[in-house]
Length: 282
Image 1: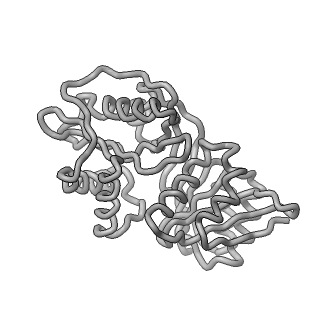
Image 2: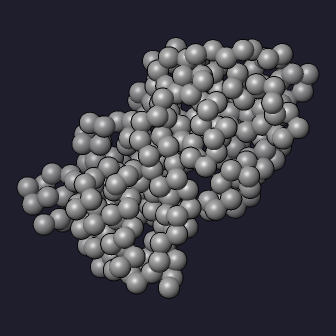
């Protein structure tokens, strides 16, 4: 038996789920850091839900930051994930999709589709990487720096280009909300640039937990690629966080062999595979 609990308060949700999810902190850094970041932005999550055993043990958790975004799932067995989907489908009108680790996501998506009589559409196969020790690449000309307010327009432009090229299926906030997030991120030193007479590459890091720091986005415009700027910038930014005692983590699209290779060359190691699945009306 699985009992479903809904929360409206992110701090309470984190208080309940963190002790269990922190037992596998890297796998669960996505859901935990998204909850932290959403709360830090002063927003309420669209959906906070947990599944417990009869004796109160947390078995699975889900977070949907916005109604137009997929729900992020914690790691769970296939049986628990399927039961969670079945129970949740009786109490939640709809979900645009879900993201989570294998095999959790496949079991959840299959049961949700059956319960809601909809279809599933694979959006992205993802691989989670983590880094503890940087392997410095060859340093290209130029150097890196922290972004400043005068970089805002360029970072906005490059974020939109990154979304269109790397994650075209991902739902995006309004331009006004995206710009406000970038402005907030720049003020908190969350963005970094490589300069070689001009700005040539961007790395962001807008989410973290106590011991982990997410790296995203990573973007170099096409006319500046092939010089090693992104590799050098990722390595430099990652080293900065490692020096602070953080483990760096990021996702890659498994279809992008170039990025998967680049990150491994600077020290990132694969940990787990995830999927982003969309639910489509039949």
